[in-house]
Image (cartoon, rainbow, N blue to C red; front, top):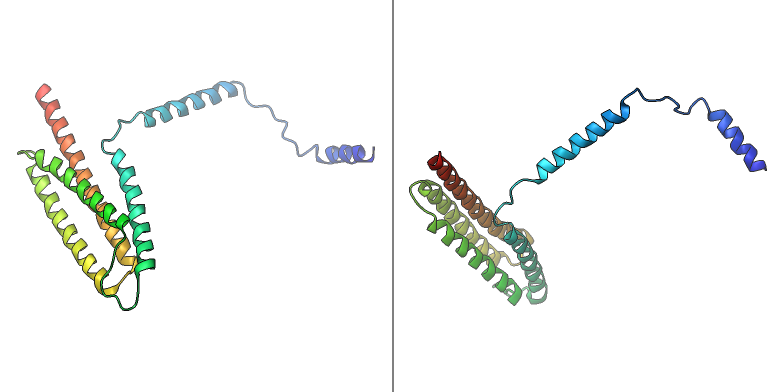
Length: 187
């Protein structure tokens, strides 16, 4: 009974602080309209076309993780102060081979799509790829010289990612050029 008195006193004390105002007429309708508008905007945003080559991004990310993990494990178990060469675990070598084969496949697709409209884009992409490959070779040499430096390993993984992203962007641009060309011929 004492608790009830305390609760009653609490409500009596706070009764002026309660929000007892009623909303304006049509408040529910305005709220429902805003909710419907927000749902329409969300469905418009989610109905964007599916971008090609998204499936291999997930595989590439998994391989990057495996590559990093393999290099880390390989460097911890195989490192010694007297060794001057870096040894990679079989998982790391497999990851490197996977990235290299993926890049070669995508590069073949890019080269196969070369025509008058896409020639300039492809030549520019090939120059950028050559620079990235040279950077990767330099990183490998630095890794051999300095040993297992995590910054160099991270740069090597980033280099693979940049090459893959470059090829993906070029293929997307090629598809857009072909689509634009087809729309112009239809009109």
